[in-house]
Amino acid sequence: MGVGRHIFILVLVLFGPAAFAEALTIAVASNFTRPAQALAAHYEETSGNPVRITTASTGKLYAQIENGAPFDILLAADADRPKMLEDSGLGAAHTRFSYAIGSLVLWSQDAALANENCRLLLENLDMRRLAIANPLTAPYGLAAKQFLEAENLWESVEPQLVYGENIAQTLHFVVSGNASLGLIARAQATDKRLPKAACQWSVPASMHKPIEQQAILLQRATDNDVATDFLSYLRSAAARELIAAHGYEVPD
Image 1 (cartoon, rainbow, N blue to C red):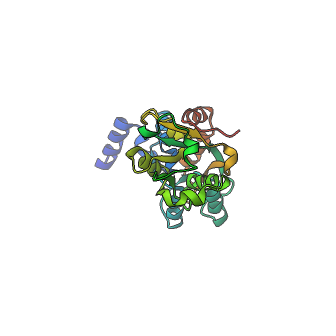
Image 2 (tube, rainbow, N blue to C red; image 1 turned 60 degrees about the horizontal axis):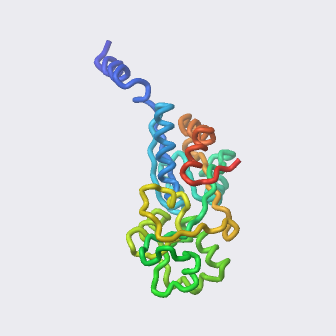
Image 3 (tube, one colour; image 1 turned 90 degrees about the vertical axis):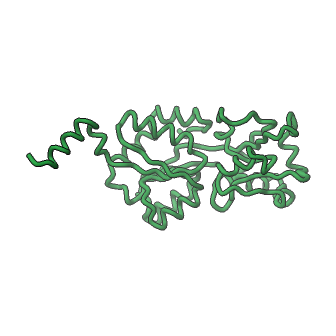
């Protein structure tokens, strides 16, 4: 028996089959970072398959995929980009489905705004800054713009806007004090690590297009059994419970 064979057997004994499991790389929209980490940890524990996560705005992840980024799955914050990937052939046909429905919250930790009506403050921001995600690349930013336009507030607040590259950076602007108010994801506002809100207001879903978050298997991973298995797991009762616990509505 050769030395190489001895080494293979030793590694198998020490680490088991998981040492040779096919790695799974998932591109995740920034708003879904926390639940994605929880889902990945649970999936790794139950399946033994390693998962790597890359986060950015949906628009940036889409551009990276178009340029050949080696992702296996996209968990987007909208339904548009997964459909575009499917239509272009970069996404595997008939693998696209909705895994979460997001919502917006107007949020502030500015002590000067304690017990204020957050929504009324939008009528007159004065010198205050309002943070939203970039509407061109981040679905939550687009929803924020749609809400502000629906309320005829866009033109008046636009000079006071601070744009986050994604919804995670948008929250950072508000927490750091670079903006007094921010339109953030409801899932972010439920994070227990977040400072206590001085004021917050839930944006009615009727004031913007639904934030329907879709997953899709990418074409390069059609032969990756781990990727297919993870998407099946994402539809399981255990995964749906985790998603709901992080502040999302779970589609039927």
